[in-house]
Length: 319
Image (cartoon, rainbow, N blue to C red; front, side):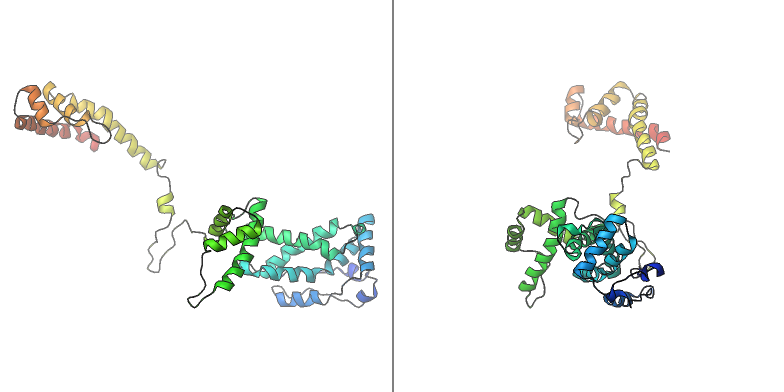
């Protein structure tokens, strides 16, 4: 993303009466050149307390946009300074500055000089709030903090965690996980439950995972979570296959059994169908042999012949 825009309309530039602003001439820095932007905003003169109150009064009473421009421009360097505190989140500083500038404009709009504080003190909250929101929206694909307590813990935990790790570095390198003692210390310092610290630590330590497979160097697709997370139950071919299995398990088997004689049908049912979902409950060959007064081998022969007939009768359903 390009560097934050800094444009001062000619009309506004020509109507800044303060002596410290009389010789100020600002031009739009080269697009994408963050250093030029920072250099430009650092050359903008600061307002005195009296100038600041006068601009704020003009803005509140008359909606004077030129006065608002002076208040915003004179505090752009504050946004740059605050943005440097958040460089460790891996987001471009230009983006952080742009979001901070939005917070600054919100602060200028709401600033009341009658409260007796300088704009710099009032604007810090608004600038940080916009930067915080931007970081939480863009740091991860999945939000790591949604409630006010989680957001506070997110920013404080990173700060305390980095401080603890800096003190605990050893020859083996920096440890990635917090120890139990460090978790207890952070929970005590932030006055939160240690379970909340553990949960946020897990969120901070985790990483986004690509669901779709990415092509490997050899052109083959790598295994990705989408392969085993996708719900196949409603996939059309699976639905049709399930219906066919259900038809085979009901109509097909019943029609095939109807082609057997009564004894063979009873043996097949007793051996294979009258069982629970774990395969338990079917009668043994000896139990059926005792029931019919024949040998177990004879029951086995009847069973084998019946199964052969069943397979042939079920062939149309398997086609």
